[in-house]
Length: 355
Image (cartoon, rainbow, N blue to C red; front, side, top):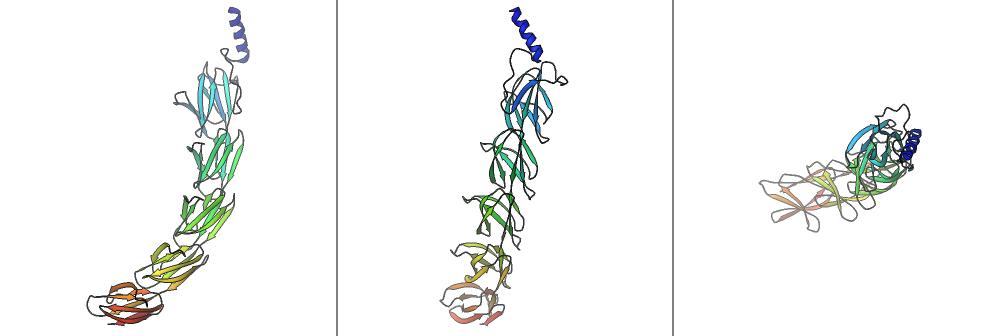
C-alpha cells in the first residue's frame, strides 16, 4: 500500500495533478491541461478559460444551478474542483474542474449583418431566448444548433468552435407618400413586423406578404438584398366633414378616411364609396390619384331632414335641411316628407335644391 501511494504521488508531481483521478478527455469544445506555472490560482483549485472572439462574460453554475462566479472571455476563472455548467450568452456546456488543471474551452461566433439599425435574437432548440445584439455586432456561443430571429423571421444557425457564422439579412422597404404603416406576414398569415411607409425592415431570406391598409402583395427577401415595394395612394376630395371607404374586388372593406385625406394601397383596382355611392378607383405605384365629389344641399325652413336616393329609389344618405352631403357626380333624387325632386351633382361644384 505504501509503495502504491509513493508511485501515485510521483506521477502526480510529474503531471501537476492532485489525486489519481484523470482529467476528462477532450470533447471537441473543452480540453484539459496542467495549469501554467504562472497561473494565479488558490491552492488546490483549478481553472476554466473560455476562448471567444468577443468581449463577452462567461458564468459558472454549480450542480444546484446556482451562479457562483464569472469572468471575461479569454481570461482564466479559478474554481474549486467539481462539475459545473459554464454559460456564455446563456448557451451552456458542462466542464469538470480539477486541482491544478486548466479546462480550456472554445466558443463560436454568430454575426448577423444588415443595413437596418435593428436587433437580432438567438434561441435554443426549445425556443428559449438566449441573447440578442444589434445587426453588425457578434455574439459568442458554445458550439451547437440554434435559431436566429430578426423581426420574427428566422434562420437556423450551426455554431462551430473557433468559427464565425455570418447571417446576412435582407431589407424590405414599402414606399409610400402617406403617414401610414405597412405590415409583414409569413406564409401562414402570422404578422411578423411592421413599420412606417418609407422605413425599411430587416428580414432573413424568405417569401413573405406585405400589407398596406389590408391590400397585399407578395415579396421575396434575399440575403443581403433589398426589396422595394412602391405603394400608391388615392384621395377622394370633398368639402364636407365626411368619410370615404375603400373596398377590394371581393367587396371587402379595406380602409376609410376623411374626405381630402389620402390612403395608401398596393397597386390595383379598388372601389371607393361616399354616402353609399361607388366610384371605381385605381392605385398606381408612387402616385396619388384624386377623385372629386360634389355637394348637394336642400335648402328650406324648419328642422326637417332631406333624403337622397339613387335612380332605383335606394336611399343613399340623409341630412338636416341646409346641411350639405358629398356625392360623386351623377343623377339623384331628393325627398322631403312625401315629395321628391331630381338633382344632378357635378364634381367640384355645390348644388343647391331650394325647397
